[in-house]
Image: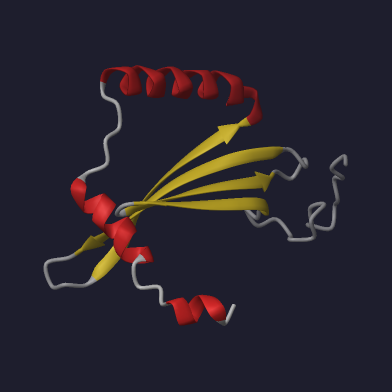
Length: 124
């Protein structure tokens, strides 16, 4: 759909002149102490772009926490180059240091599934 210029101060999403970007699709990936958010958004001209946000919980000296966030904006004209570079660097790392789960990760996964009672399965 083509964007429409309106003189009444609204854009084609009806959100006024604010820096509103319509969210189209989101995916959260939890990875240890970090969470990565992949958000597809739409510009005022109805073009998709991607934001990648890394969020990590940080604790202050007084025990209070806040989330430290880092964000990358990735536009469709850069998708191929970004994807090629990311794939190349991941392949490089995996060839030289294959992933081996740490002992604590294995225990955490087993712990998550080991509390199942047979009675719980029967009630499904």
